[in-house]
Image 1 (cartoon, helix red, strand yellow):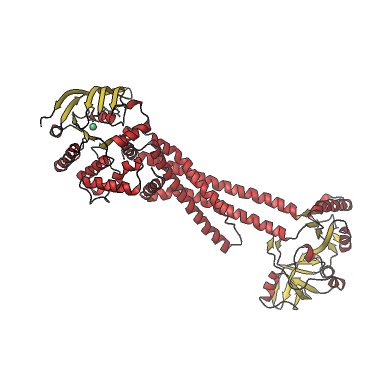
Image 2 (image 1 turned 45 degrees about the horizontal axis):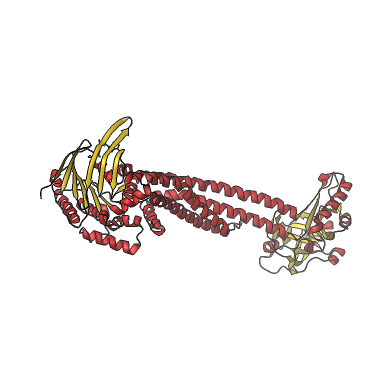
Length: 390
Length: 226
Ligand SMILES: Nc1ncnc2c1ncn2[C@@H]1O[C@H](COP(=O)(O)OP(=O)(O)O)[C@@H](O)[C@H]1O
Ligand SMILES: [Mg+2]
């Protein structure tokens, strides 16, 4: 019997039992949908995290100093001295705090970073309008600020912020630039931020201690060496390994990759199990179908159908059933993913590889679970089959 | 064409043994029209199943066209059924989901005949039994007599030399029964070998020859005077 003919007959058989066929397919539809949707969301999350960490700047090392006892950080001078060593291209000490910012009757509460002119270089963030803070600003303790796009949105609602006066904790500052848009990161929004000279910040916040230093290594090769030497110095100084932490973006990336990779595999695995359950549903219904069509099988055998013909017939029927289910599940997955992308901040990745794998796997499930019923049908003795009801 | 030597069939069901056939010796020559007559339960259908290669005897020897059937593989038996034998059953045994034409096409599908040629062959077989205008009908949309004629078309579509009919008129009213008998006689006159199973003497008298079986044994063999 020819394949196209067999597929036509299979479709007719599926069609003649619409509701039952649909319910059987539903298992596969849900299975494939789950695989496609969950893996896409997982991959989207991985991609987003990777992008962000990479966007933080190349060869970036972050040094956090929590200090010991009353000593909650180090001074700006100490910080400057600490980073005077081989392998460091640039460093930006940061004094950070959440502050209230006002413009006319509007206010917002971004993170204030008091830092040096190298901050933009180290963090790989330029000014998309106006300019960055300069070393002259630092020297003369200028009340100038570079603001993130969220701050601009909150306070200026479309009008040009450059040259405008805002009040940070009551002190007037002039906006000289707008930070390039970065999106949200692990440490909150990168756009809800204000950058001012560190010298100004010391006076404004009445603090001299630096808690964070962003460091850019000369190259990726020396990152590990720089971290080791920094840690050695800090250990001597604080005599407590909990007083500081040094990490770089490669480490973060590794950990993130591991976490999200595991997550994706887990999600895919759970979804795969539901696909397997769908396959068992197909086997179940095919067994019922073999029993119901015992007489039909007997007739076909009397007319000259070989075992292979009967086998093929039932195998194709279950394969067609699961393939239609697979395509349905994929379509459903696509619609849901598109909806998620449109209405949430998640950006799932609808990858063709995942789709192809899911659909092929569902086809495989159909054939695998169709094998036993098909075999059973083909082995029926024609006499017993002809006697059978149905 | 058909030669049986001492064929027996023994059914064992939960310890109970039923001797459905006990030593049947019978020959059917090419072009014969033989009736097998006997009461219900006498073993007629069992005999037909064996002759039709649907079943094998527990003892004895069956030669079809000179081949010992019991030594053949399942696949070979399927081919023989497809090529040499056309079945007509009491309960028609049409596939309910298929149209009349598709039902008639089935033996050709298993023979591997391609679409266009297959449809034309099936159509001419249906025209042969006077149902050229019912090709799209499902079995449930046809009368009993029409269904049996579709079944006869299906039996002869592959042009097999041997037609086996198991009580083909058993489920039909007398008019339809007569039509079916007329068809079988026409096939016989065209050179087919026909084995007809019945419990009705009037039907048996319409063939050339009959054998009477009782409790699995042949008790009478007679040529019908023409
Ligand atoms: N598959 C079977 N299993 C057990 N007994 C059977 C089977 N088929 C037929 N028989 C028995 O064999 C005998 C002959 O049956 P059958 O050939 O159908 O008779 P007929 O067609 O003449 O009415 C009956 O007694 C029947 O019960
Ligand atoms: Mg019978």
